[in-house]
Length: 473
View (cartoon, rainbow, N blue to C red):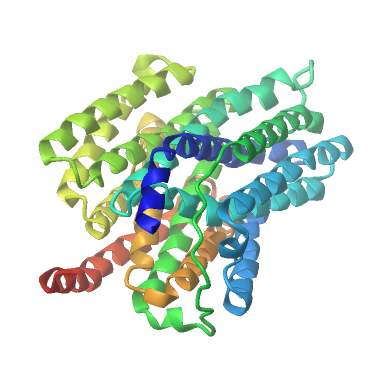
């Protein structure tokens, strides 16, 4: 009976997947707007780097608070999404995020920084619900074997949103809705975020009208206590996720300020936002390549052809979006080739690939710290493409083999997104004390942790996987 139901629903998966992918796009777009808000609010309210990083602290701190609440409910009352359904959970997350966007209107009207932070916190809570529900829902829209590839594909469109946000969002705030005299005014954020709220509500309306497949898990066992923490790779994975999100967000948050430095490029915000798109565009390229690399149904030769085609196509998309010449963007081709080689050296093994990508990012960060001019700029922008598969790889490695503790472990990993709130704060403090360029030592340590986690899982989980393979599981 279940198999027949699944077969009857399978032909309907395309429309639901496209609908959810649209949500991932908007989710990524609005999240990346924080990188535009930071330099904007910093100048508007004369903030220090530390104070401006409260934007990320409030937004990603909401992930921790929301996930903690969800976790506590799960271990006492059972999984709320299993009871309410994925569709209701997704709609609730969208409405909460839209409400957060609407709160930018009073924050801008009164030009009061704490109100902006409150709006960002509510927005973050909405995206926390989406993080818990939408990612899991995508994994159910098809076979289990293709779940990782499918999730990387939707995450790639999430990255597409982060790629165009600096260009379009930066144009709206820094130029289109800015004061006629060019001065900074809080009102420039009112209309853009009302537009974002309206689009989110339209997506919610679309999702409410589309017939989404229902996945009921039945009565699940309520696992009490902290049994998931008995697994050493989960504890390490939680810390690695903390470092990954913290490192990625910190680098993205400081790119505009970094490029403004006279010893780097001396760009203003209007120019820098285009280069910020390259950072997030790199993540989009890497996720498309990761989706192909993780597709076990393809031969190595087909993977190579498809990955080259995808990389070329996405590069052209990015080139058409950013307001830069081909000579200004051509350096990115080097990182695409390096990323391509790294995938094949990693042989699509999540742990090994994770370590290789983390090692490359450590080298790029050190280069950005010790060099000046274009070499420093290229080094910092190249980090994005090697961030691409880190979230999905760390996530799957951390919860591997948890059995009945999988849901509990998953909640703990999502809580680790708190790194996006904490790490930028520390980097902001160092930037105030020692300068922006030297502050990137904080992400260096983050990626070193990820490198070690990948090496640990290569040894620890590799032994488990080989044992299961020999036993026929």
